[in-house]
Structures are given as structure tokens and as C-alpha cells.
Amino acid sequence: MLKYIQIAIGVIITSFYFFPFEFTFLPGVNTKMAMAGIGLVVLGFQLGKARNSIFSKDAVTISMYALVVSFTSFVAVTLNETRDYTYVSYIISMWVWLSAAYLAVMYMRKVHGYISVELVCNYLIAVCVFQCVSALVIDFVPEVKRFAMTYIADLGPTQMELMKESGRLFGFGAALDPAGSRFAAILVAITYLCVQLMDTPRKKYIVWYILSFLLIAVVGNMIARTTTVGIILAIAYIIFALGLHRLSFNRSAWRLVLWGTVMILIVLPVVIWLYNNNEQVHDNLRFAFEGFFSLAEKGRWEVSSNEILKNMVVFPETIKTWLIGDGYMVNPNTTDPYYTGEYYSAGYYQLTDIGYLRFIFYSGIPGLLAMMAMIWKAGDICMQKFPGRKMLFWLLLAVNFTVWFKVSTDIFLVFALFLVVDKAENQAYEDRLKTLE
Image (cartoon, helix red, strand yellow):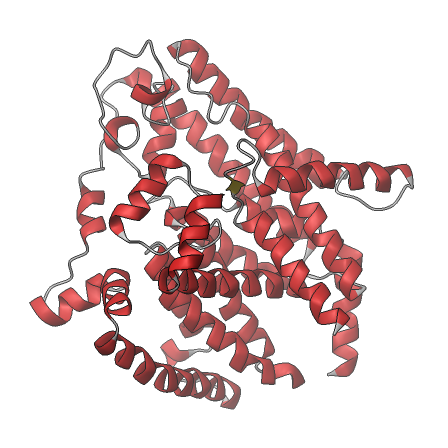
């Protein structure tokens, strides 16, 4: 029983990291920042005892890439004489994520006696399941929703008002596109694990992975439709990994497809019944899968957010903007009292939410390339540390660079957890598994 309690606490700690939020009675300090502070103390203690820590060649390398992001942002802000320092402090943000990740991973090791890539994935899956269940409880139980609205500042006052008006689902720190991108990352991780386990004695766990996938796919889309990116990439990976595109897959592949189909057939009638008998579920499902409902009812694919996204395709009109940006990432009307340009009543600078364009408008092509290189290097380091898990990190990179066609949020926080996993310890765990197989 004690072990289960410790694991539950570990899931909560990881959730504080993966979906950070502020308490309204403690403004200015979110759960990730608090974890980073504790993580730095633990790190200092480990360094003092000369134990393995995140202070390594990899940490120095990734810090150099983060410094380039900060430098290009500083140049853009300085030359454009703006006050938008969103990414100037990126090197600090990177170390906050890394320190908080270190604390979460150290707790996992304390509970289980080891740490591995697979264990980190399992905790992240549990966190996303917890957030999806929490979102449903918040939506269905007025007392819980009142508590969340009163004491938890998930998104900041402006976004919280948007959530109240739109009726969108949200969890404890999980909401809007940042949540969607993280759900998408975990969906591809689940799919990867299913493929890896299908020929091993541990294939019995695949059923639980599939159930988790379906829950996150459905409820995650109710929270943020960016989750769909993960669904699409997961399906594409399954098709190619199992050889479905060649129609020449083996018995294990058939078994995995069969299990997935059976689980869908079990879950689908429940979802249909709730859709027809519960107004909240009805509205949430129509929002989550608006495109499919439009296709069925109108004969064409229509999603309101996609239509909005089309209007966000705005390119710089001057060479200067392409080279050094305009120095604005967020809405200048809310951050710069000296801004005299075009007025934006809502949204971001140039009214675009598209990640690639926002980075260009902020710090030009050099800034965009620096940010892309930063995320790429994080994935590359993970591939070098865990060569047997390369496909997992390729999938995560695909999620990040695909999501940027919609929003600018990145998933460095996912890579950060794997960056602090010890390579030798992970290899020892995987070697033990091989002896059991």
C-alpha cells in the first residue's frame, strides 16, 4: 500500500512539473518554479557528494544552444527598441525546466530504485490520464469546478475568462494549446511503447496503454484540439512500424491491431450513449471532433479554428523583419506602453498564433533557426544517450515541429526529463529486461 501511495505522490509531482500552475493565494510562483528551486538544492547536494547529476557535457551543450536563443532575442529587442523580453531569458527558462525535471526524476528513482526512459514515459502517461479525468470531474462536479476557479490560476486571468465563457474543459494546469501539444507528445509515446512491447512477455500491458490512448485522445481533444496532431502521427507510425502499408505484417502486428479494434468497439458505444444522453458530453464531443461532425452532416471538413488559422498566415513585409524581426512576440498593446503601431484588441502580435511566424516576427529568421536548433539538439542528445529509443525521440520532434504550424509552444519540457535520466542506469534496466525475455 505504501508503494502505491508513493507512486501516486510521484504522479502528482510529475503533474506539477508537466502541467504547472499557480495558486491564487501564492501569485508569481508556479509549481514548476517551486520544483526547480528544490531541484537546484538537491543538485547542489549531489554535486557536493560527487554523484552523477545533470551537470554534464550534455547540459553544457544544451545551455549553449539556449544562450543562442536568448542572444538572438536580445539583439531583436535591442535593435527594435521594444520591451518584449519573452525569449531573452530563455536560458533561465531552460534551466528552470531542467532543474524541475531533475527533482521529478530523482523522486521516481527513489520510489522504484531505478530510472529509465520507459519509467518516465509511464509517469507521463499516468499524468495525462489524471489530467483528463480531472478535467471531466471539474466539468461535471460544480463544487470541484468552483474550487479550481477560486484557488488555481491555471492560465492567468484573461485566459481563465475565456475558459469560463467558452465552457472549454481544463484540468489542474492543463488547458488550451500547451496542454494539447503535451497530450500529443504522450500519445506518440504510448504508440511507441505498444509497438516495442508487442513481441515481449510484457505485452499484457498493451491493453492499459490502449485504454490510456483512447482516454487522452478523446478528452484531450475536448481540452485542446492540438491533441489531434498526436493522434495523426501515432496512426502514421503504427501503419509504417507494423508494415500495414505493405499489407505484410506478422502475427504480433495483427494482435496489436486486433486489441486496438476491440478496445475501440468497447469504448465507442459508451461514448455514443453519453453523447446522446448528456448535454455536456454532447457539446464537448462536438467541439473535440468538429471536423468529423461537419464531414458527416455537411459533407465537407470544417473546423472553426482551422478557418481562423488561415487568416493568421501573415508574412513580414520588410527585409528588416525577416532579418531581425520586430521584437514583439506577445500583444504589444498589453506589454509596451510606448508602442504606437497597429492596435490589436486581442491575440498576439500581427494577430498570428502560428509558431514559425511568431518566431520570425519576434527575432527574424536567425531567431527561428536558433529555436529550431535548440529543440533539435535536445532530441539529438536524447538519441545519442539512448540509441535503442531513437524512434521515440524522432516522434517527439515530429510533434514539436508539426505543432508549430498552429502555435508556438514547444515541448522541451518532455526532452528535459529524458536529459536527466542516467544513460548507464537506463541501459542496466533494459539489459535486465532482456534477460527476462
